[in-house]
Amino acid sequence: MAITPEALKQSRQVIDMYEAYADRYDEIVGNEPIERVKAALKRLAAEVGTGGQVLEIGSGAGREADLLEDLGLHVRRTDATQRFLEIQAARGKKGELLDVVSDPLGGPYDAVVALCVLFYVCREEIAAVLNKIAHSLRAGGAFLVSMRHGDGEKNGDYQTVLWRRDDFAQLLEQAGMAIVWDEFAINSGNGDEWITFLAIKGS
Image (tube, rainbow, N blue to C red; front, top):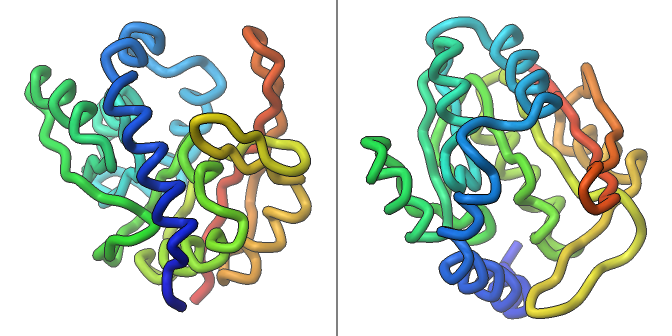
């Protein structure tokens, strides 16, 4: 299915926002993931096993990839924002430019990680993106994803798409992935609601 001009426009707006905000974002997030994200990443690592090949979509400052590598996984770090890749390069970490909406993902991977990134994808495009991710996984490969929870969209300089747990779960299943774990959480700082899923691709 062809990518719509609206999806490309939205993707560009998000990238431009992070190009300007990346340094401040790096300061805010600190040197390691928050505890619930650490726990989810450890759950993924246990599912994949030492030496697994992981594609990370939206690596940002790279702290989640650091943890995955410490847990024995090999991570292909990617982001659509050049400034994030420069921040990682300053720490000796190599990343690649990749836009999950418009670029091929390669593979097959043992796992794909997409934390705090796919809620920027237009509602009309998300099924196609999830199918692309599923196709990049080997049979039995794992997908760890977190989404903003709620209804509708929030519009400003860029759009954030909110998802109800069951609606997004259905999309994962339609893409050929079975959910083995999920979690609902509320951000203590701003009250944002999150859903995180670990799903396994079928044979």
